[in-house]
Image (tube, rainbow over all chains, first blue to last red; front, side, top):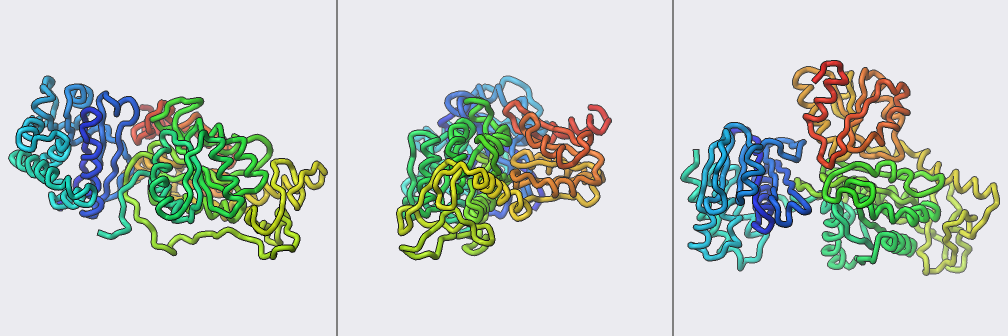
Length: 183
Length: 382
């Protein structure tokens, strides 16, 4: 396997579940794929309404620096987060945003992919609470990072069985949308 | 997947370490960025038949754990700067009455309510001298979750062995970030049990009469022996005294039991120090950035190394002296205005060789910050 270090920022607003998505991704890497991961997030006012972010670094060796200064992958789920964090992206990186929430206005030196994540989750599942899992599905569909089965394992271990069906649908929908852009 | 692999916050690692060490009683008042320690213990302790109490404030928390320790329990509280300030009076009582207890301080920006959700290492000297009067203290730190767990267990061991409060000086970055923690096997880290007196009921028990090895066996307060506990200078029965010889002997005993055993409670890690002409000294989350710089520079062939201190107090001066004797440049990486740098300067002797590399704006010092200042110190400019 190619030795890669993923530096991923999930950004949006508090309550979208992006911190959870970041933790699930990191857990899939550490608990099921023998990789190293470090996850951190914004606290305080930023997490309570402003632009929030959750950082995940995944690597196959030790990770010293827990904070990301230049994400290789940036996910933006609100306009405010897009405005605030898109200038950080590493040249040649990947920027994923939601079509409903973000108008991509500025030019960044990155591959920008806009997906109708929110719209699809609402129309096909009818419950936006699983949007974060859909985001996660799109990310791993596009870039791999961890196997889909590892994420499924974390979801099964972490949440009551009653939530599995909704999470699974969201993950599948996201994965398919992301996979179209897989390189 | 092994059952022992977990992915947790540093605060959870601390709580899990405390449970591993045999924590019986926790009293605390939640405060960012330490809250998850209380949160985790509030879940795990009652389920394990242990006592968890949320108190009305931090001084009552400190007093509650002191009382619980006296009755034979392994105890702990956790807080951050503002709460740690409130605990100082009772912390001094625990020093004077020689009561084993562990206090975790997950540091945030101060003074006062300061910068609650952001990182700092500004309580290093408060841990040393926050409570008044001549005394010694133990403070441990960690830069990763495996060490957070390990140092928490060692904190309980030192507290029990030397009958002293032990402070765990973590910081917001370590407390909040998540990373891998492998929970050690049951017997992997030795655990020191409470040393209890073998004296039976009806036999005179002297709570403050040291054995030949200097240790003071305890008797669970409220059990078979009657004795006095006070914050005043006291005799071997625990009753107040101002007799000069007793006062001096007790003060010396309390300081010497720690300062004479520095080597036994010094935990550290060294990276590439053998031939290092530049030695970085750091602790807590700053040490992660320092290590990152050392690895990058080593890859370029520079002779640079890192001494990471897990034991901050008592200050391991001898170790620091040995590790820096051949260094042309010593730089202390910390997130304060140079609190440990002072001690390093004293240990190294020639203070001109010792410099501070810091950041005090609530942001974690990163590898670029360190490299920038290092270049200037090395006369290479920006």
